[in-house]
Image (cartoon, rainbow, N blue to C red):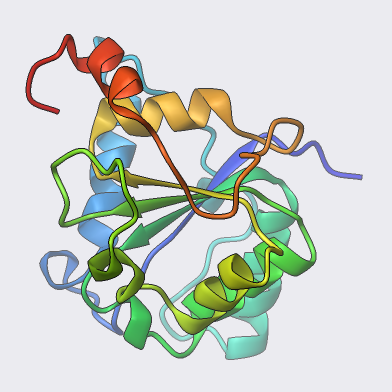
Length: 187
């Protein structure tokens, strides 16, 4: 059995190789946070371990590589933007595999949100891929929903993993958590 210490990040690439035109830019920002020595943000990235995918890789090869990476992960971060719900190939596959085969907790991180998320409003639910919405609604996954901000993401990464899943299916942090992290200032 693999040592499961990775933090798997899923995002909609929208078929773009231009990093400015898809949610990959947020994934790349997370990688930069990880490299900065003065930041309290670290993660083991399974996308940088093992076999690398090429732009011409076949779907079966891509899915096998994604499964291997998920199998070595302790948590999934799902970066949710305006087009995530529209992704019909790999994002739904990654979510389904993470839930049904790996039983990973999911940190749902809204890339266009900078304010505190203390209630799960309908506008967030409207961004969910169907597979995530179904899993939340039928109680087969455990999630925490946060804005795309380094400190609150780090809090979720330090708190949740395979042995400490959120106890709720669609959870959010309260103001007390945000206040501790941001000293009662802007998130």
